[in-house]
Length: 292
Image (cartoon, rainbow, N blue to C red):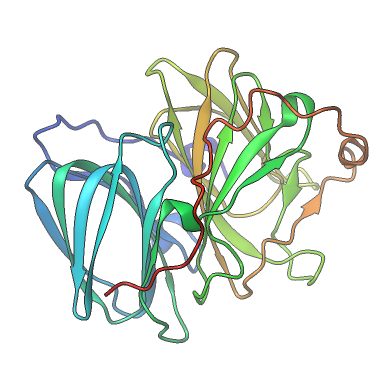
């Protein structure tokens, strides 16, 4: 696979416009499960959708909106942008018809995967999300779990990752393309990148141990990278804090992964964690909330 098949650039819309910023379907990605998109809705605009045989995770990236479906209603936001506050999200099961109405300009990511069972809709507030500082030295990053393995979904897994200027993330390089539980499970994955500054960039590498794939991609704000297999480390350029939204899906609810044996030694002796983290403070309250 080449970088042209693995990296999708985002469209640019004026604030008064609504539409899809970036999208990939399973057919386009040449895999089985993940359908991912990011939508912009101008203030006062709305859009309708249906999940069909899929489950969906709707994650607010910016703005404020109200989502209604057959049995409930939930308000997501406000969120100024991904660097200002924790995420708001909504899980919807299969056979859900929904409407999103933008209370102000908003950007909403949507990850989908075929579901084998119909679970309950569930609202995820900022205080429900996880908090972890992972790694050490200039491989320190912040993980915010939105729909982790213990979340009541069938296949979808969702988290946000914040990487400070000049730091490495997903490091040591790891992979999850082999079904070998509990050490590793097979997952499809997307990385959706955002930066504070429009000129910012980072480098995403994707490679397999046998050399079939070895791609190095320059990623900028709004880019979407596909991770079908292989090791996938990322580094953000000096001076630019980076964010990426991970959506993963597989047959098992696990994020178990295998490190590249060449670099696994770094995990055994991490230096002190980067004092710039966390980039986002976690809200104090914690507790789950069922939509009304």
